[in-house]
Length: 417
Image (cartoon, rainbow, N blue to C red; front, top):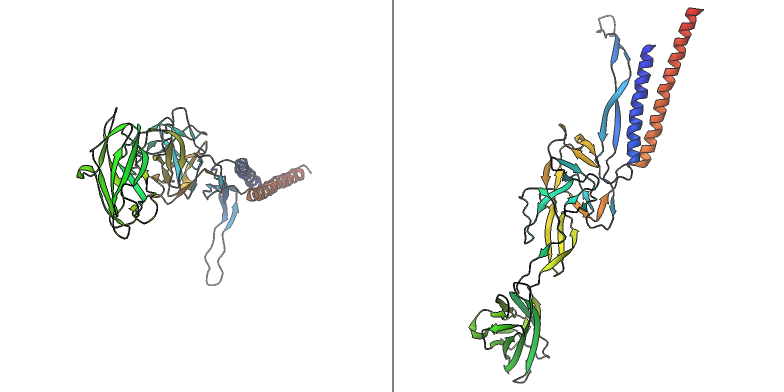
């Protein structure tokens, strides 16, 4: 009789534990990156009343006689299946599509999370707001280059950062110079170029027709001296394609010397010789222009974005876009073996395996959905179903205790009678 009581009590206690897990799952149904858990039971100690006997020549074998003494919790498993993705529009929100996890650090050790609702703190660190831990990754150099072999560390985004100026080194010409233009006809084009300090200077090119399919050109600037002096030439083939382009003095570029500032050389790309991908000389009105130049002034960081590989890029006021950092991802042989440390984070355990840290697009197969968050993977309908089953199991065990108590009471009454 006492065995029935003890078995029923173990059933009550462990069904209560299962209800606690279900309650926690339901409580976190809207927690970012939450992974639900499930409880499995196992049979507890079994009392052997009689052992098994072997068959003989005249009698069959006899099975053992055993009575179970209850049940216990076999495991509480974490479910690391993918949660749904929800677009948020926040540039620093990230969701992982795959089995990897974000790496965060408190300066003493590393933890791992699926919650990608990151923010920038007062010092520029990219942090997980639930714990204050700093997101880990690699930082780009001053030119925006990322080296995957760099040491993984804190990601710091300085919103006051600047993109250095770049002096113009090449200008590109496109368009037509009229093949039917009269000798002496001129055509002007201009563009703004930049010195190494980012100061802007106007550059004017003036083309003068010198004969069929032939033009001379000169360069000038209102804020800088252009050397060498003199004029260059441009000629076209009978079919209108570029035949030649020369500089004044036969050099390979022109030099602009500002009144205050360092001189800088500018090469002129007029197109491919015998091609029509730059300047051409057809019998149409002249419309040639300086279509592009590669210099820019210094700029301030005004916006950031994240791509599918976790690369954080900065957009500067001078039109430059430059990589700033890349978020690191960690994978585990057995993510269910991780220890839940609260605040949407996990830490390594003896059975999770060590973290393998990599980067999306190279060493990691996972990708990142920018401006999105991963929702909880809790299936609320399954949880309510499990709640009903758990409640019925609890009620049944309670009924066993009541019945066993009544039977014990009957025994006591027999003695009194």
